[in-house]
Length: 241
Image 1: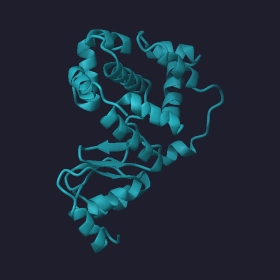
Image 2: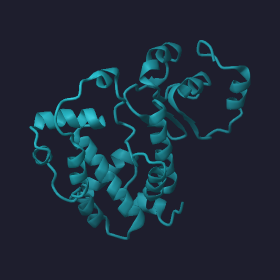
Image 3: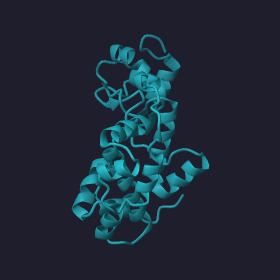
Image 4: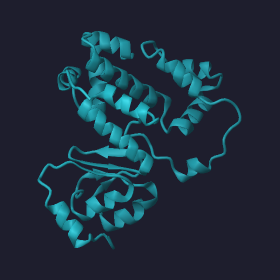
């Protein structure tokens, strides 16, 4: 591909795909989809180092350079190669549920879920000097064991023996997310597993996942994946690997 134009054979192959065919790109593969006209007017992402030429070649694409991946239904794009793994796990989770995706992640020794809206690591982050002292991994493990409890920022910072400011900064450096954003994502993940694998009432799922009320669970689940708890449970009831 040169100057935003595809090799004719590749362009013909993409054009022959039936409408609604799911297409996925990893890293700069978004250039191919954009050149084929598959991203015009749609949200997408690519590797942060290649965003400026991408915008030059494809100004109609709604490029978001600060996320790991974008799911726009039948077209999905990811940032770098590692984010491509996150996107593949997202597809497994979308098609087969969280339990299957977690097993795939364990087998491949990768994190089971990084939300697509999580920021790409920037050059500034790579170059930032590491502070002395402990990290936040132990506190994240502590929180995962207590998702059904109130977990304020102050409580997590106290567990890590840090000030709130230091804890928040270190947490973002280590995970790419704020503590509140990470905690909400983990609670959504637990709620999804419970909805897939148990017959617990939605109110109980909300309590066990730390959302407190079914209304709060509904709001967070819709924000994360666009469906209600009841619809999600019906979608994956009986789904196998």
